[in-house]
Each structure stands twice: as C-alpha cells, then as structure tokens.
Image: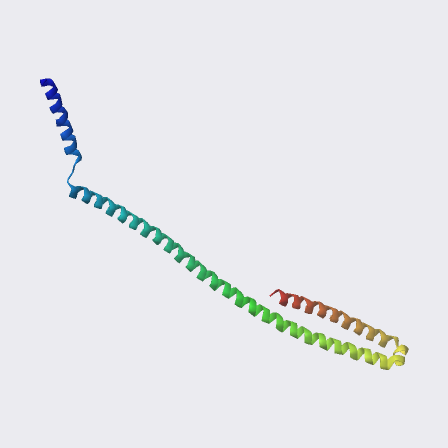
Length: 157
C-alpha cells in the first residue's frame, strides 16, 4: 500500500511540477505576446518602407529618363520644322523658276508662230531656236522633277 501511496505521491508530484512549469504569470504571457506583435508590426513596417522606397526610386529614375527623352524629342521636332520650312522656301523658289521658264517657252513659241514663214527660209535660225526650245523643255522637265521631289519631301515631314 505504501508503494501505491508513493506512486500516487510521485504521480501527483509530477503532475504538480508539470502544471507549475506550464503556468506562467499572466503578465509575463501578455508581455511576451505584446513583444511578439510589436516585433511583427515593426518588421512589417520596415519591410513596407523599404519596398515603397525602392518603388519611389524607380519612379524617380523613370521620370528623369522621360524628361531627357522629351527634351531630345523637342530638339528633333524643332530641327524637323526648320528643315520643312527650308524645303518650303526651296520649293517656292523652284516654282518661281519654273514659272519663268514656262513664260520663256511660251514667248519662244509665240515668236515662232509669228515668224513662221521667215524662219523657214533660214535653216540656221531654225536650228538655233529648236535647240533653245529643247534646252528650255529639258530645264522645264528637270524643274518639274525637282518640284515633285520637294513636294514629296515636304509631305513626309
């Protein structure tokens, strides 16, 4: 029987020591619980701050890149506008030259029609006038080609 009591005491002693070990004061548990949550909160805050800082840095880099690219595009646009204006002035001068050549050509044709019979008698004069007409015709076709090229170039811009 004694053994049973010893076993019972030992069993109760063990059970008491286990319960005593398991039980901590309530304030200790609350402090540990609070410390764990404060640690988790601080870690989350630090992680979010680092993440947002990285994103802000990326946004700043993108903004700087955009500013430089916009400046380059504005420079290119200004250069294109000036080139287009230059092309327009060249086209206008070529149009004037073309008008002058056309006037000269019509004047030569009128002179030929008025002088019709007198020209047929002199072969040299006829050759000279026909050479002049062919030269003027060639210049006219070249000027037309140049005007077309300039107009195409102006349309591209």
